[in-house]
Length: 186
Image (tube, rainbow, N blue to C red):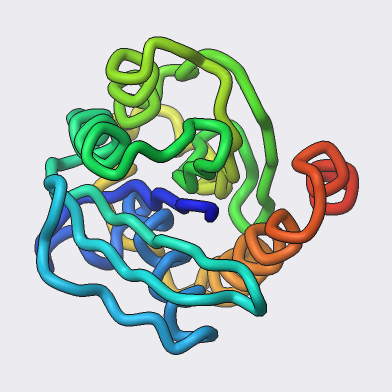
């Protein structure tokens, strides 16, 4: 069973912000496969279902971004799942809007959600789908930028990127992560 963690912040005021592309991707994946998110468990909203023949669990931490690792740890401890079956989906300032980058290890790169997951799991080795949000213009504070909504001109690349991230997650269910990276990082 794979479990896919999309990072974001709970609440309608964060819904359409750059920091919530992880939630947006999970919503799109859930819609594709008729998966609904149930009540909060393990500090997260959880949706269980099948993608093809593969059982998947979609997880949206409700802890706010900088405490995402608490929900990941709570889920791991309660359900006794393996870290190697997890994929984390999140926003990335160093990737251009509309593009995704897949990795299976690395530092947090300044991302507080990833920093929290590394802190709570004790490792930097886990599969990731980084969704590009580009860097802000000079003089625009990063914290304000990531909590701002996508402008209309980025609607198309955003939707395309979400679809591409869903395709990558689906592909990874039937292939190794190395094969998935080779296909989707090109």
